[in-house]
Image (cartoon, rainbow, N blue to C red):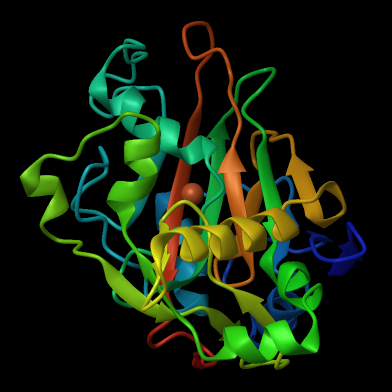
Length: 286
Ligand SMILES: [Fe+2]
């Protein structure tokens, strides 16, 4: 197995390993260590299907069930696609399911709106358009590192509220009460510490609605500043997908966003599993 860093701050390409097959302890430990170090791991040319994706995902920890507002509701997959889950045919562009996916164009951390934030997401490219549909990543660890010692000390004590309604509202999608009810706003420590290496990051992105106890304007200014620090070009990594690519990303140390593709012309099917930080190996320490 070879692990090649992709940028100065984060991201690595991992080759010479078949993640669809059962991995021995030593190999997985190396992958897990690389995940802690690089936050984003790209595995090209993998033949994952749903079953082997679940098996690989469960090495990191328990998969979150998909509860609401995704066509794969009731499974552990969050389907990112312009194809109808039953017919396999393209979904009309004005369909509510396509409007829902527009929030993916905003920088975010998957599941940060859940009471237990996720450790990581694993996205497997099953069908990709010939152009467009890249995913971009930004390092929230680099954002934290860019702060002064005084700012770090201030941030260490802060709690941030995350609410999934916020991001979707920004793109004009309104949740039904039924979609809303499983996920009331939640509170998390703003600063996250990686249990493996002690590196700190900030939990921000589209779901981050406010700093608890701060006036709205000051709160928004800090959250926007932290996201700007994370997403300056030097802290970003853009991936153009090929069929068979699998990416594991750390939702505590990075934010990500989707980019557009011609959904009227091309087919795209990505299967995501999201791994809970509770019961993950090794246990994530907030
Ligand atoms: Fe996402």
